[in-house]
Image (cartoon, helix red, strand yellow):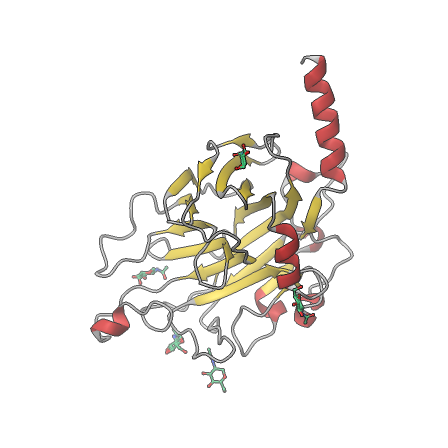
Length: 301
Ligand SMILES: *[C@@H]1O[C@H](CO)[C@@H](O)[C@H](O)[C@H]1NC(C)=O
Ligand SMILES: *[C@@H]1O[C@H](CO)[C@@H](O)[C@H](O)[C@H]1NC(C)=O
Ligand SMILES: *[C@@H]1O[C@H](CO)[C@@H](O)[C@H](O)[C@H]1NC(C)=O
Ligand SMILES: *[C@@H]1O[C@H](CO)[C@@H](O)[C@H](O)[C@H]1NC(C)=O
Ligand SMILES: *[C@@H]1O[C@H](CO)[C@@H](O)[C@H](O)[C@H]1NC(C)=O
């Protein structure tokens, strides 16, 4: 290491520990799942089945599970694992809209002071990096014949500034399922190009950091597993189709798309939000290490 490298490493470590954190969704051991029901903490919990509580679908696992070791302090974890599940009751009914019978979904949305919109305005300027770590819930596996959207930033137009996808992308008509790379994470840009893909291996944490330049409209992906330092997994890639000035809510969880139901009308067969086949199985994912950091242009993630 040169002297410059050492100085950079020290300043990066100090900065990441304090003021550069724009949003912290790491669940400290003092937090209890009941806070999810009030939707008062770091998470807006509205996106779930209407007839069950938020804590029915989402749990903090206390000391019974280990979070990603990437953010351990002095070798010890400082946060709880978040378990997010869907089942057949996970039909979201948006305000003023019909029930979304095509989807099954449970998502947490980043918020601060019970206001996700205010947080979006704060964390989605300049360059910011969205951190999250994902692990398989082996007792509640996904069905890789379906498409899952598991992390995304959604502006009002329903598009995604970036997204993480698992499974087999929805198609009409339905093709051969599951597709060859169904068991891999796909990091998608706004136009749904795949920027990075890596196998979703069970029993280990997969750490992602997505750097978003909100003014220059670029993305950059970093990735590692377990305790290994994040490494660049893409170059800085233009994301030109996102509307200039667009910001949106930061979602993470499990959103399962349907398969086409041949019994539906041709119009309904394309309406993935409200129609299609769902098996109604209980499925889930584990999350930890969720936070958003301010980034200086040109520095390492
Ligand atoms: C799942 O829910 C849908 C919609 O409420 C219902 O039509 C279907 O029968 C349910 N399936 C199972 C397996 O319970
Ligand atoms: C939720 O409860 C309402 C009222 O009982 C019922 O009409 C609806 O089908 C239920 N939704 C689900 C997904 O079970
Ligand atoms: C949330 O923040 C937005 C943007 O700052 C503001 O316009 C809105 O009034 C806030 N909502 C509440 C309920 O405070
Ligand atoms: C996964 O989905 C496919 C397509 O609907 C279905 O045939 C299969 O039975 C499902 N598998 C499980 C374990 O539910
Ligand atoms: C971002 O855009 C500004 C102004 O157009 C430019 O000067 C700068 O080099 C760009 N930075 C990066 C990292 O692309």
